[in-house]
Image (tube, rainbow, N blue to C red; front, side, top):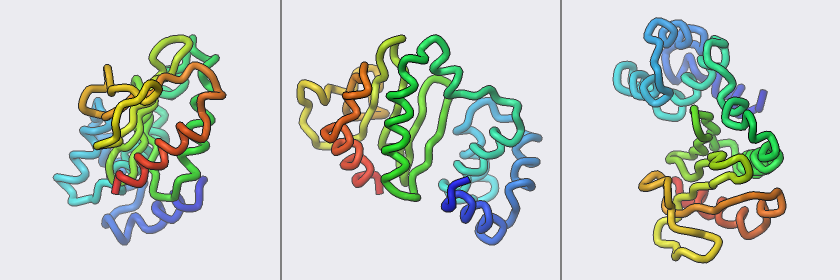
Length: 180
């Protein structure tokens, strides 16, 4: 377990009033269909900050073993894309301890204080990477957000591991920097 995550879990009782195990029991009783519903519930009904609420819901899902492995399901039949996904996740983790990686049914949200990156296996041969880069001009490779709509400002299509290059990492780092 990452040191930052373990520190967050250790600090949870002091910062939220309950341990992870206690929060997990509360969430099991509610059985939210969507991740965001659980986060909203903890924030509005219990006054938990977004970072802790997101972590609690994510870990409660993992601990309960009732949800399927969302990333494995996303890449089922698209296993050729997993090296690209893994390279992106490795780079994202290197940005800092304040990054939260949140798998969902069809994509993986990367959040600092706000979501700044979205990783989605778009086809069997391509990952679409959504970035929030407000006021950044569209270029040939750094396209309009397309199917991401207002969730992201730009999209990069990635079909090979070599596309996770310095230019792409620079854009990801820029989006991370703007997500405070």
